[in-house]
Image 1 (tube, one colour):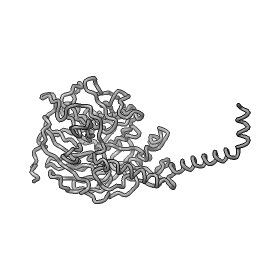
Image 2 (cartoon, rainbow, N blue to C red):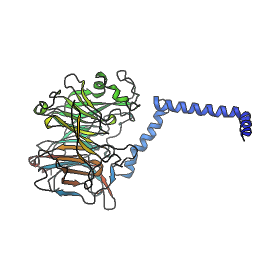
Image 3 (tube, one colour):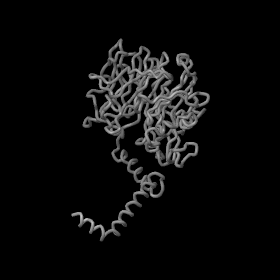
Length: 445
């Protein structure tokens, strides 16, 4: 047998050498196409982009639908006296009679609808204000969503039309102003009345001050916007990391980026004066961000824009860190398993409490036998005035409230997409406000 193999190789070595050489050249060129973006990289990307772009349009449905985990919808749990009173603002795509819409809804503790804001992205910008390979799409309802929203006492909303811009609308959903800066995920209202949002810039070519990052890539930013819609400040998170000597976080996994999305910031929060004295080593105005793709929460100095504190353990793709009383931070720790998607391989999501610099860690809520809690992405947590936690479980289509002991005292679940569909839309945010926030004129006829 060995002699026949040797004889075959001797007679056909030229053909084999040629075949192997061609295969090696093809492999090497394919690597260069992927890594350096040379021809025909743009052709492949355009084809993929077109397919990805048109699938939701072909199906004419919201792309973020997930298997339903709960049978009932609306408010299914409401324990008066234990749940923190108020009204709840919920951002969720809503199925209408023949179509669906981007909407934000304000409900009372029993789930009764108090007011609805409906946003049509196609009427905001005729064409996307951003033209590039990553997000340069038409501003259609199929490829954006309301992500990060603040309710003002007069019934105005300030929110991100994700990756297109920051907007302010009145109670009748009419645009007051719009900022064509690529904002996403998070909006925070500080004590001075300014809005802080997560933003991003797209780089199609390498950037000298960011060595090691292969183009194209996204540079995450933080933007401060006045109450009148004017950009007052822009901070580059990548610049803060490099200037502070924290660039190693970008390469800890052995690769510098996740499909060009290097850090994927999903939150911005400012340390307010009323709470700053409780945080040793921090000052009022310091800025906290959450970098999902490197599982890191960090705080940036308000003056120097250098990193003051960073923590990676024990987060796994976390969201929404918040400053709370007594010098603590609470964090929504998603803990997804990248290989299994919806499977909660690490025991489900959890809410953890940490103290900066000492890095003390305590789990204050996690999945329970009678209240399973898991979302592979997204998520929001709000500590309420009585110590309860209001938690948004995006992929479960739910907003729920638990006590400090972990007891479920309030729960709202999105409606199933239709009578023949066992799927729920992704819920992007749930926030509790005082009842007075519902006392604005609602007549929009």
